Image 1: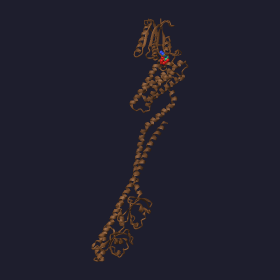
Image 2: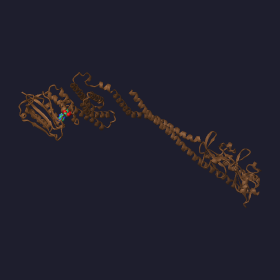
Image 3: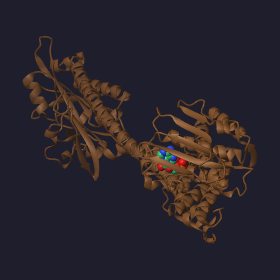
Image 4: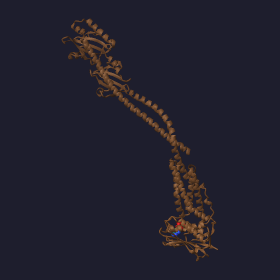
Length: 639
Ligand code: ADP
């Protein structure tokens, strides 16, 4: 199940990163296509405009050149002589023919050079068949007569053989400035078509020249010359287009950008057109190249993506797995952990009286703590391996608490609280370490030493509370020895003075003469007897104000029921005990109401009483609430 989960998560991450890469590449290609077609579009417009201006200028220049040539011819002496009658017809015709052949050697531009009489009849020409044609009705002749200046035909003329020509006619004057005839040059209209090819700026760009009567002067399809121009089927094309603008026209099913100029020289229009597809084909080419690069990039990126996401997803997958495992373990906690507890099973406990059960609880608890401490020591050095075992023991401890708690002992709630605090800290540190989030070595060290410190706190608690109670009840025989009473009281005095030398409380030790020099003997476990006295003094210190003294009295008790005994008494002037509570205070875990705001477990007097019982004695308490308490016990002397 974990493997499936791992693959899915890893694949998901890989898939997501790769989809992002592919989207990035596709978006880039789209952006490049859009951007490049915009650039190319703008560029096409700009270059169309520029080329159209140049075509305009050059066609105008061409026409001006023809005008100049015509005017130059009209100034030729032979022409003047001819009109003056000084140059023969044949000679004139020959002159014009020779001149035209000479010009056409460079380029076949000139259709005819000719002379027109004042009345409007062609009188001499390079082309013999032109002689005799009456041009008096033609606009260029009429204009030249009226303006007495050069005129170029604003329309093209179509001859019988379907050759289209453009004519320039200029008046010829004699030496006195008097018009004696007209000189004309006719050029082929195809000349313009050929010439405009120079200005084509794109494989697919075309020029058309249309005269003022909408007749085609120049067209890439030469068969259309002199036919009517249909303005691309647009009624308002002439009005719509201007020098700065363009229109999109549909020509034979394809879209074209169309621009036009009106010639500076006459009313002709130059039109240029460029197929829109042609512009976008460049963008498409560019996008295709980007696409190819993109595909290569995506393949490399996919490879890298898989590799990188493998690395990236590894810790994510591991963290997720750990979380899942912890959740699963939490769920299985009761069944798995409890079964593995290395403790004496409570269910197999033999029936016993209440006190024995309590002791058994303490015994179990004590064992759990020792196991726990052992694991902690191991775990701190080899954390990863020991973590599981550590967790097991923590859970075992919680389990023990729950068991004992169910007996509703206040003791346990206090002890639980005191142990749970370091336990919770340990859990927190351990989880922090196990999650893998703590990578800093310094921090790891702090976490581990935090675990050890908390464990020490627990150990200290165990020693001072539980171990003590447990040992007292399990030591069937104390190591008792016989002491002279005087030696015993000296020893007690010495121990107490040493122990409380550092604390700022007054502890008065009153040793009565009856014991100070007594040669009588007592049989006791010195260390445990000291424990009893220390317990009583500690209680007196704890349950009285700091400015109140505590008195330890040792004397021979002659009034006692026993034959002879040493009376030990600890007296204070503290909070005291209610009469009805006095008989309970030697019970295990018992604490009076008045003492609840002081820390304690209710074990000290119980343990002390147990020790005394094994010495054939017991505690006797005398107390008045808010006045003070006196706790006494007797140690019998032996013969
Ligand atoms: P603790 O750790 O609570 O002091 P002990 O077994 O030593 O446990 O004492 C049991 C209870 O008896 C105390 O909680 C307190 O209520 C009461 N007690 C003991 N000694 C004194 C004292 N000198 N003055 C008042 N109350 C006392």
